[in-house]
Image (cartoon, rainbow, N blue to C red; front, side, top):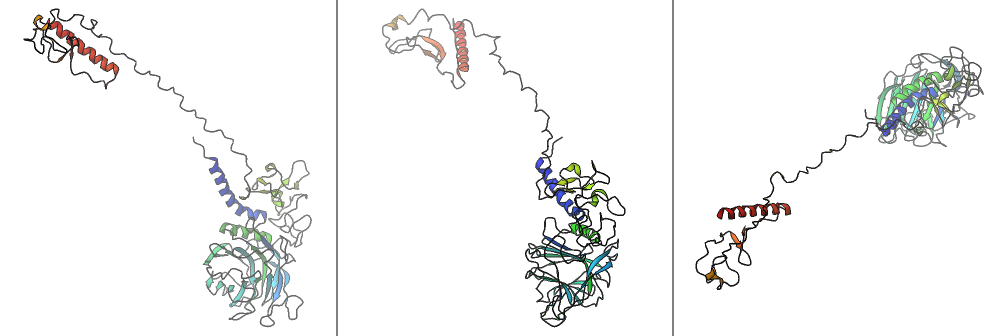
Length: 488
């Protein structure tokens, strides 16, 4: 059986890796693109992102045109942290979570600078409800630094890409949670809309209507200047908000919804399915992180209904060998410390994962399988020797060789002898009389001394080689000899 080239194996492993990474994102608490810059807000009594960085800023523009108010300014109306239960339209498990309640004409501002996260490419995800839902425009996100009407809104229960059109009718229901995902690719300029994990609309943004014109992003608060009506917004509650600097795949969108349903309930102080711990604090504690996973160095969870064993650990590694039950969460160093759905230790992060990140060189050993062991054709070369048969030896050349008989003893006619000069034909001189009765045939050649060799004047060709020429000559000599004998 032929072996598949190693290069193809590596390619196939990388293809499998890229698919698995989307799914692994939910396991690792990375709803955003793997390797991307992300800011994730779960509103556990803080407006800081769980990755660290700048906090969201509450804003309000209901006190007059062209005015954006923040905390401490006159007329500012702030939002607040609240506890609510996510409805089944978004999360079947209906977790009770902490969230941020914003007023009509109010919302949140993200600096989107140092670093810039959303630019030509991004993923924006939010779990939000409007209450009351008025039926008019209600801003979801503003890309214009609050200067233009252009943006994305909820409108009549659908999602309006103003001024292009409205998609996904029926996506929003008053007082119900909806998970909205927007992705944009800077190369193709394609904007994709997903509602509760389902693809719900696509728009090719060739004029960059939905790419940020400046660093700042506004959520839920409408623009303060523009040609159309301003302050188009509804009061509502946001339980999850994430900004990432690259578009994620449809598979990752589905995975992120499952992750979010776990993430949003983390921090309520109640150990629930999918959580290894729950400290009740928005940013976690020294034992429990903000994703309700146990930090390394602490005992693993073995208590239902929470996640147990490896799944309870932030590192996804619960070491049980040589330590008291139920084990201890550790940073992995070898694959032997990993198991189950996350069997590979990522040497770069010391976290057990489903498969190595496609961006990391495959640390798997080189294929040690031997090369094709089928031997080359070992049959000997054709050993039949070249035909060495000599010229047929059954018939020899006339052993008598050349006719030993001498020239006709009678020689020339006596009458011719004195008159012969130079070259002459036998039995005839240039001035002789009649030829001798033993006259040479016309086909014979006279020897230098006047004798005849008994061979034809037309000689055999030498083109056939020495042996053929010699045989031909011998044949002619034999014929000549026999003729002479016949003549005698």
